[in-house]
Length: 96
Image (tube, rainbow, N blue to C red; front, top):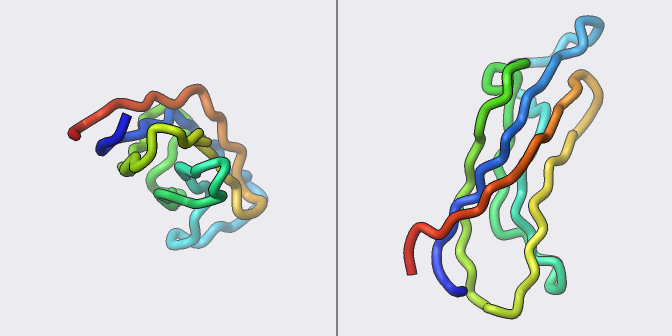
């Protein structure tokens, strides 16, 4: 259905004690992606101060323009230094 949506990712992370990660470098990225068009609709970088070892929700908004699109919800790790656990993604509509 066309409209504005919010994707809520439930994540936790543990930083590797042997790796010194800069506070401004992302340790994970969440994305909403249109599968067939290979188009990224939304992305958010998560930095060491945001992610903790306790599961929490991290949200991004996106707009659905086509009822025929298939969406992917991704958690990406740009490099070593952290173990990220991904429990679920919840998508809900916020407006037409």
